[in-house]
Length: 89
Image 1 (spheres, rainbow, N blue to C red):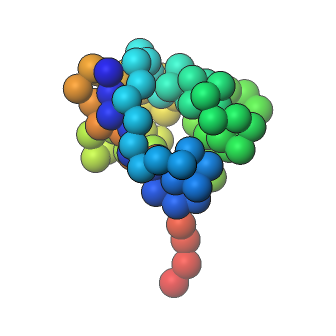
Image 2: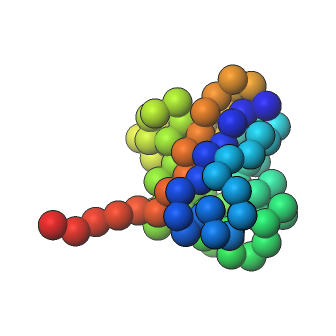
């Protein structure tokens, strides 16, 4: 199972900093997290079931958006970090 870590505001939604989830790719992982934690997690995917541009998902410290997006493969020993997209100057 992959280790999924959260930062705020996702820690407030999930009431945890980390959870283990069994999933083959980021899309499947996001759908499972939405089912477990409810509609507040719906921000993970956009209306086309693609990885939302409003968040950053790191898979083993690499941005899933620069890999294969929602189709990025997850291995059992993968570490995933989910955080909001931050911008500013």
